[in-house]
Length: 536
Image (cartoon, rainbow, N blue to C red):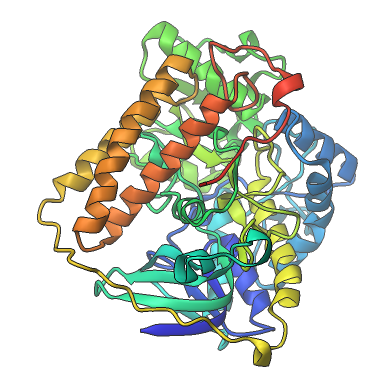
């Protein structure tokens, strides 16, 4: 089956749905998402959206905090744009029905939270379920829009490009994207989606690590597809590990929001001793990279499985009202956070690198845009400031719209290319799923042990060697067996792992989220720049 559309949106989080709702005013929009609409990282986001709305705050302060967090690699023009656009984008979310928490004494003012790295209270939130509330409102508006068609349980395989279809690029060696081949995971059918504009917003790649706060869908699909198509990738070495993921055998991927520390939570060891003052002057409100490394150091020194986050000194009613989701989840596991500390460990959380884009979300491939965690816009630099991610998504959804509606031009002037249907060749069904599960587990353990919070040249080189062997096996499976959703995720995970290791080996210094014991100092003379790679 061949589907033609004006805008093909691959992903259904805050970035993709924000763009889709706006783009529907200018053409037909098709959304492809590999699970249900709400199966996104957005839906799990607890903290909120950073925006200057308080009387004691300013754009200059938010910009300074973001640049400080980015450790020399954030682009000042991008930071300025995102920070100054924040209030208007927040207003748009309110207008579509997002119900942010307001102050009890004044319902017209947001109840602003504070998180690590922020010099003011500026986190607009919906208690501790901000992402869920945003996703709820966006999905409702998207489903009722007659110009938007949604394909759930569909996963993109690869992008359709001029080079792939015609075996040659355009003028000045420019590659162009025309859409994607897409697998219906329920029927096994593979369809051709042709679009004038293709937008990648598939989220991050936390599942490349053994322990992650991300949902199971976070397998780096958009990044991997873009790389295979020849797009420029940037800063893949900067993987943010969230310091406080709930440590419990029955808890999977459950985050303890940074807002808990923002409201007075203190990190302690099993003996009840606070330890952050040994590592950073900001103590428990230090930036995420510093806190994650501190916890990692404490665990390696003590041999313990976890540390603890204690907010029990705050009033019980405050904790229950401010963090109802965290309170109920912990209580269901026998942990009453109003009276006892929460066991926590660091976990892979956010990709600061991704598909390199300009200030209008355009990739290096014509017709291909990227927004959200899939993209590297220049905002986060070497380390993302808390609650800037949802903000980046809505700002760059708007930026992508401004450029793409100019790019598509009149529909009458567009002639889609002739694309052959998917050809499975001589592929047969994969009878032994162990071929997938073994490599899946191997990649995640390898990345956690060799390419984690603290790195060395030797471990990185070993990881690269082992990944190369796995890649050869996966590539052979790609040609031998009929495509499945599980296999596509494995293929994409392996590609993203390769990109992270390659970029980490290129950066011979420690900066932001990349901490290498063999290169402990920052080297501004050689490495105060993005790490940019692409498939030759």
